[in-house]
Amino acid sequence: MLAADQPSDLAAQSQFIPATAFDFDRLAKIYSDARTDYIVPMPMNGRRMQEYVRFYDVALDSSFVAVDSSSTATGVGMLGLRKERAWITRLGIMPAERRNRVAQEMVTRLLDAARQRSATCAQLEVIEGNEAAHRLFLKFGFADHRRLLVIRRPPGPIAAPVAGGSVEYLDAEAIDACLAARRDTPSWIDDTASLQNAGGLHGLRIVMPDGRSGWIVYRAAAFQLSHFALDAPDPEVAVQLLSSVHSQHPQMDTKVENLAADSPFWAAFQQVGYVESFRRIEMLMML
Image (cartoon, rainbow, N blue to C red; front, side):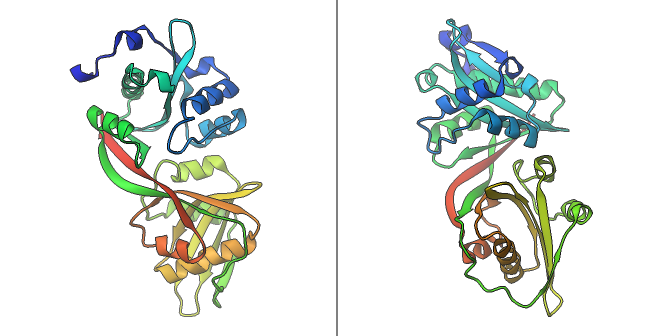
């Protein structure tokens, strides 16, 4: 750990307990309390925390809850693991503890855990505008990689007309084949492993009259569409794919996380009614 990041007495007195010692309701409460004043609070409940751990391969035995000398939780940090990759996520420190270097010590513990699990690279996302967190990660050696968009579309009919192409709805085998052939560079959240872990996947392929074709895979939960993967030769085909999806689900809210800010399909999303909620900075570090 860098000399500038040596823990204060309060951080040194903290215990960092494996997250396996806490149930999902408690983990969700700690995380939500730590994020109450964040730019984007993202409150969670126990069910959503359990889903998050499953969807994103969070290793609770390599994740930690910080507690002070009175056994009061002061923060949480989680680590996702996939082969040689590690992902720092759900990092939240109680407001009163943020000047006590608890965050620095938490990140140190998470990186140490990643190395112990044979990870060779680490990644994370920080909300654009959270300068304190961004500076902290830079200090540890993370480097900015790219900007990512979190975008939403409210329920409602599709305004863009669906052109006369043939639509094929994909079965599970075809969906897996499409995901195996992805040409994009997904973040951890929309990685193929995340989509397959989440389940509930739907997909369709469009062939345009001139022979151009593309496919889209997405997750349909009870009230929301999410986890999109899309492959198209141009934005026009992307518009038709998205139009077909929302024609099938006009009453569903939609949230797409971590679309690359320079994606050639961002304009297609906008054309069918998506708006930007906020941005993240994806950061990478070799271990």
